[in-house]
Image (tube, rainbow, N blue to C red; front, side):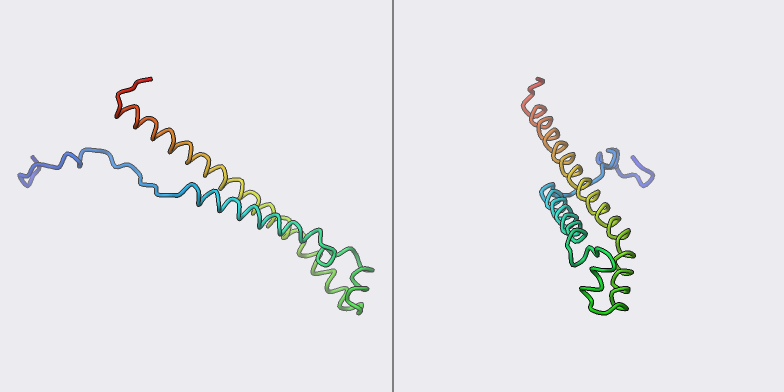
Length: 123
């Protein structure tokens, strides 16, 4: 009995387990989307229009030396951020894929253990 004179619930003595509700197929889909985004962003670096190429190409494309210099400066400034963004998206895709796989494997293992416990099959 507790101080109030009532009998505590048996559930009160059971440790609380964390509740995690996720869909492994959603995680896998998110991984694929992040991977596609990284691939698309990487392709921008190899596109002749967005990759730069140098002052001569910029002047020819812009038709004006001042605009060409501005475009060249912009592309030069964007390049490191672009590489970082591609790497971040690729890393996100890898980690989401790994999380999806890990949770899927944990779910299968939990179901198998539960089935063995219910059926009494210790093998």
